[in-house]
Image (cartoon, rainbow, N blue to C red; front, side, top):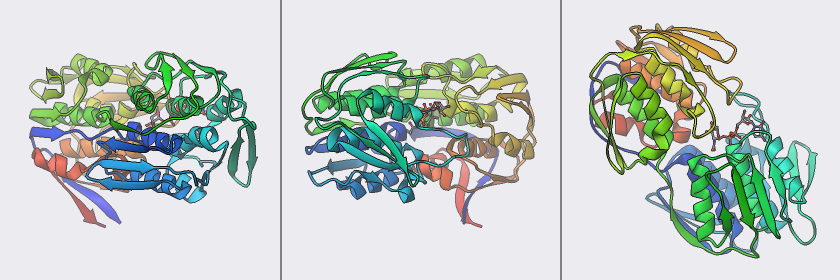
Length: 420
Ligand code: UD1
């Protein structure tokens, strides 16, 4: 098994370049199933989840050619609209093929995802959405089957019980080929949804209102190929911002879109971090003064992202005072807290509230990663800790952070992959 070994306490200075957003690349790959045309996607991060999605769409019948961050996808006429358990079980975002396949092939058979570390994470809103577009939903043998009516999906009103990111993306991809107008109400406003809408528009789709909670789509008969560059990963950016706030001499984080980080930057500044927006694509962070504790509640965009909650908890262990961290998006997303406690943090959990009392000196030890962002939190804690930290189960990190060890080593960290 592979693990990450970190020798803590090194100051971090220099430049880190951020990769394309995994969570924007996943729906973009899936959107390529909507056309026989060639879809060329730049800035695709080389991480495990992307390789899983590529395998999934190849399994469906598309050809995928990848070369240094650029993916060329062609989904000809011979598609088998099935997402098997073997692939879905490793990545919940596989449900992103439901909408495009139901729209393009009139049928989609997708294995039901199982539970995962951060809660039960159902896909009921994806299914409800497809029903609103006229599909019939059946379930058998652990699979969900969506079947469009004879003439294909028809436009409709999809009202989400709560904003869902992949649910909104999935329904957007279904609606673009449905007959007539669709309205997505209480839609997710995340930048990744907007990036998908931008790609779909380049492919010929008619979409308005993405980035707001009401999205209108006028279905078209067919879509064509397109070329598109994926947005920078705002969660990777935020993770390195926190690394800089904990240990930065001067850490320059390049190829970013600072606007997508607004809620994170605001909270970090409130905690005393020195962050400068140097230009349209560069953020600079320094650790010049003692940090103070601040409270954080995770919310859908433009609120504080749940995908930054774990990393922010690591930061708060280094801030003076009491920080209340409330998780409202997922039901069970504090798995990193007991691991941080093993490193010396003072954290109490009560339901969806974590109370972090700082500042504590963290000390290195063996810790276990439970999900992608929890792993990032433990890496941050390890960078700040005294002595040696070994983060086990790093396959979680490899799902979503491209060249993490190289990027951190490049700015002075001592971090390497070891066999355990
Ligand atoms: C996406 C992101 C993930 C991020 C999350 C919230 C991708 C690939 N993943 O996940 O990194 O943490 O948004 O920002 O983009 N829910 C239901 N029924 C559904 C769908 C969701 O009850 O049909 C619930 C979920 O359990 C959760 C909440 O809605 O409590 C929001 O989840 P959602 O936005 O759908 O998360 P994902 O799209 O899976």
